[in-house]
Length: 77
Image (cartoon, rainbow, N blue to C red; front, side, top):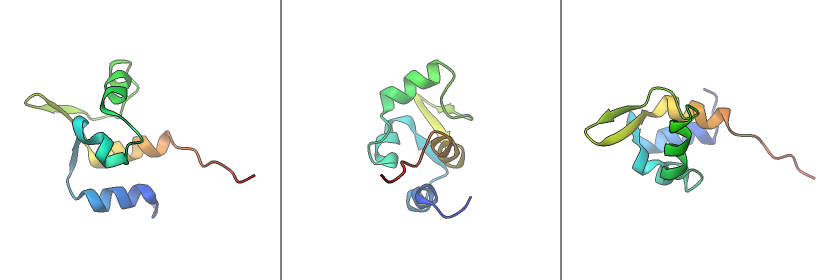
C-alpha cells in the first residue's frame, strides 16, 4: 500500500479490526454504520467481516482496501 490518506487511517487506528459501530470515527464521518450495514446486506461491503459477540467487525487492512476501491479523486477545474 503506497503512502496515502488511507495508510494514515491505518497508522492512527492501531487496531487490527474496525467495529461497524466505529466506522464513522474511523472514516471521519464519510461512511456511516447504517450505510455500511445496508451495503453488507447487498453483498457490497468489505470482505472478511465477522462477529465478535454482537459486534460486526472488519479487518482494518481489508476495510481500507475496500475504501480505496470506492474512492475517486475529483479533478481540479
